[in-house]
Image 1 (cartoon, helix red, strand yellow):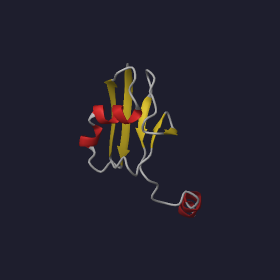
Image 2: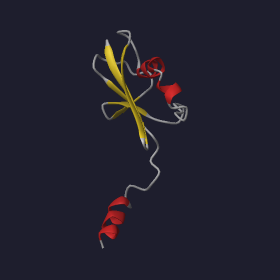
Image 3: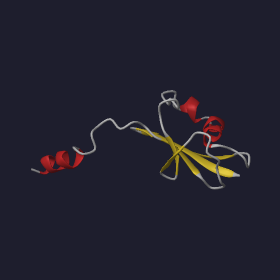
Image 4: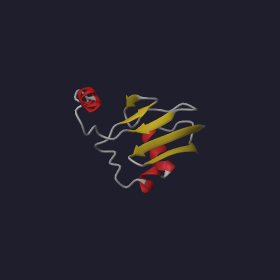
Length: 90
């Protein structure tokens, strides 16, 4: 079956479509995609992964057409972003 594996860093992103076995898991798709070699900074021990925006366990089974996403940690407090945007408008 065909699935996608996605990851993004500032200035660089990858969206890879791959064929996996019918019983593939999220972490197996990530390993098979080669994205870990493209982005050596990915640390699956600390980063969360998801399917279509919903966090899943690494062993979550996949379905045809799923998009596996690797999430980067949030580096700013999201509650301050609206305040910062308002301050820039002044």
